[in-house]
Amino acid sequence: MKRVFIGMMFVFCMTVAAWAAPVPPDDMIGQRVQVYFDDIFAKLKIVADAQPDYTTFRQAMAPVVAGVPGVFGGSFIDENWVIRQVLFPSHFLARGFDLKGVVPLHYFQQKLKEAPGPQLSEPAHGSMVQPRLIAMRYPVMKDGKVTGLVSMMLRTPFFLKAVGLDKAKAYKIICLGQEAESYGTLGDHYREVTLSLPSTAWVIQYRM
Image (tube, rainbow, N blue to C red; front, top):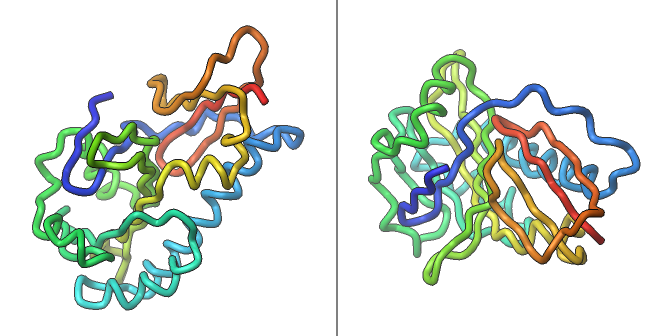
């Protein structure tokens, strides 16, 4: 999957996967990942339910994400897919960027028209100037119409620590068939769990 770096990182998987099986109750990694993202999206829902616009986004977002470890940034994206506001002033260069021309986001632009819902990125590899990030978005609705999206980006190492993958001898995260994050050598004996997540599916292979 092509990765696109635009100021702050916006990397998204391209298909909704409804086929993923429920997380086995004895798979603690899978359970923790599910709970982790359930909690993050619940926080984003609080922000979205406040129906912010670009003038009130920071006021709505800041207290909700204040206690979330590893927040890299956030943004308010208007209904035309233009970044109108950023959570942290240091990311001001992202304001005004038009996301409609970003090919990997075309699916999500259409999805938002057909069935608005939360969206989760794959873990991005990062670069010399960009940390490894996971991005999430939640639509803001008013009178049944999308008026914008609230977005948050988390540093991948904080996610790995929260779910216990930082303790794994090896792991691999696969998003819709594409490897997104890995560490170590899995070998022949490892566990695998498939997770149905907002607008995507992750396969996590790991050896503790």
